[in-house]
Length: 545
Image 1 (cartoon, one colour):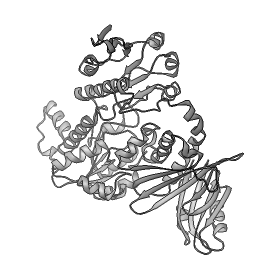
Image 2: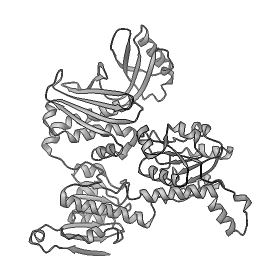
Image 3: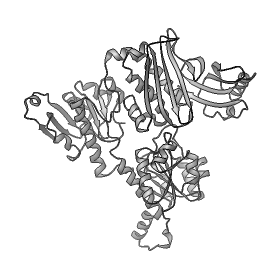
Image 4: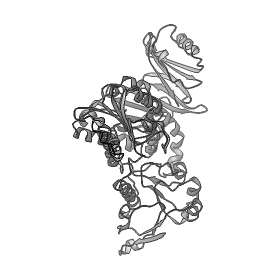
């Protein structure tokens, strides 16, 4: 079915404005798109045509300025390349897996989504799952349906005075914590961006994943699924948990090692688990569902009428903001920028991202401030896109693919990280250079890089040590005491692990004092404990660039 609505302002200025054609290709309620329907200052032609095949969508997409979708429509590269007039794609929801972001970026098409629209819904679902788990509500209901009156079998536990561990203290994690405090629970949280000051302001305790696991009676997940969070909850973490702990996951499947959870439930370590997500979905037939200690729902965290309307409203408002002001609140890709600026700064994009990635690995403390220093000719240009790309390199460690060139600054500010750009046309040793500095509550680290003619990107300084490193591949960064035999010891230890050294750079402040080694090795080194255990080695970081 196709419906068309036009909103036309009677003023002469607006009547002369070009009509903005909007295609809605997935079902959305009128309540969700009411900002578009009620718009008076822009001339909008809104066409709802759902259930289109890829061929049908490709055939008509060239007629539209805006494409508004949910999850059903697959906005592929082929469709985007056919959309010569398309300026904006709106996703009424959080994820954008159904949109080819690279293709949209290449065409200068802005993609927006609604990251906050389901926050309340997800937090409420998590809270419901906690209560259902504590009081055996689903199983008690099933017992009655089967004609049994098993009051003694379903004795539960109160939430009052229990400790809940919140792993991931973003928007949803904070909402869950707020509700838990309303139930007079004690809250301890983990988040890579959480500091003592932020925790105190939120009225929660904070610690590492291990700290949370040791003290919590309930543990709830609210982290993205990244390499660093995949199977975050595993046999080792279950082993240090309290006996009788209860686990809730309404975030992403894969955060919990499901085999480890199965073993922990069978052993009695885990009293129960409430799961809205699993690694493979649909998860009908998963052996966890056979355990009476499990309650589960089919990925319903965002499935409320209000949430589905809210995400559509958010995207609708961003569409209007773009055509009225040229800005959007929730971009998820890079908007088109001046070709002249890109031509000047594009060679430094990869360097900036790698400097950000490198320096982010030098500290495990929460970041308070990012300082980026541009020296030489770079100082003459608008380097904001380059700054965003560098910040993306820093935040990717903890946010993964959720951070991109456009939202990097927003995500940093949302996590109370201050970003400062510093420019100087004076270049001491290099024609151009970028220095990226991270400031935490306990330490400061910086990495400097440049582009050398004929050699490409180089890291030329780490903290106070001058080096010359090609920022690519697999890197081992070692802080050690400058003692005879230190280099040989490291070489021998790596050889014992069958790790081949490609190149090595060393730097020291003073003879016999602190020093560093930067080694390029042939493959990623996941476990560096065999190096850290040595007497004169202070720290080891494995960095993949």
